[in-house]
Length: 537
Image 1 (spheres, rainbow, N blue to C red):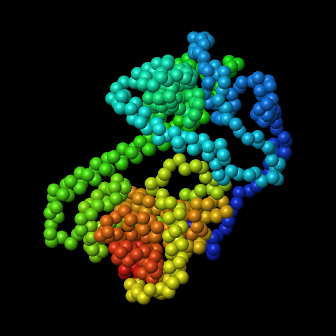
Image 2: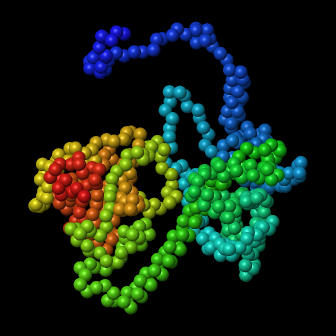
Image 3: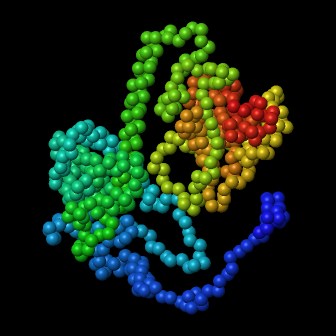
């Protein structure tokens, strides 16, 4: 290049308008022998025939199986429960358990629908599941005392080996013992144990007395060690291991120690513990929750007596010049966040920040499929507000909005609040944010304290984020606070909700005068300037 040629600069480069030239990779012709030749995978056809044969065997009626006198274990967990009369035999220096009578559960016959026939989905618990749930619910309260007795006897002590014959008869009545043989699962082994039940001690109470939890509410065939279930409960809190993992781990552990589970034909049972362990873990957890609630009730009663006694001794602890009022929040709130609700003085003015700061917002990523249906209520939720309470609040809001608005002096002009309402989707209660055809619960509305601790939740079952959810959360919160406590609530459309509460009698005046709204910092700059001057935190 000659020295007279000007040096190219950025301004001298050729440019084109738009996005410039678009270059694509050239398409290469492919070999037809590789793309149009059918290749059969080795063993695929044999695997297909084997699966079809297994499916045909599974679909056989139960009568045909009884006629053939086949006692085999099914891969479905409902056929893998416990043995009625287990026997121990020696086979290659290993202990094997034979099932003479495998516990089975009646299942309705399944008809394979045609391809174009829609599959009917179960949206509610069937009769057998409801009956089983009722039997467990009636049984759990009777097991609390035996469990407390066992925990008191074994607290701080090494575990003792359970005898082959156990009983809990007090001997005060002329009881005729009934012998029942069960397979019991322990940490290091499983064993066949004879349980002697009588009139003064039922079969299930005898099991709990010796640290064993049944896998069925009546006529169980298997029991699990309470200490093993407690260990799994502690492990689940840290790792969330599923029941399948526990069942597989126990089977492998037992097998390596020489304990094999077989049927009457001598065949190994693939998954003998999953079904029974599922029941035991589920209802043992419910038993633990009821036990903890009883203990918490007793402790709270003791705390109340101590508090009343201290108040009677120290009636002038508070300074006489303070404008705050003594009062205590509900124990539920104190337990969830002692920093926010553990104070004894309330009534701080809003200009000074108020007593309690909370925030509420909706999340539409947690949905519940409509086709999944509902199961029986195993737990009484303490975080979720009941749906009937939320619907009652919604009906009250609709009824109040039909009345003429109250005469009030708006803090922010209605024009500015209207602009904020149109700018945010949360203010549009009719905007659909999830497919209502597929989901019956489209999201969750949460109420948290200033330390990001969840206080209460509400299931969103409407197309959008309606005001009834936030109003229900706040109304439930105020029902647990002292009558003088003041609250500052952060909400992305707090200006819209504050105007609704000022125009209509949605919440009583005793609540609205102790409640002030503010917009969160991340949403404040999306509001109108007049709104930011009042509601920007």
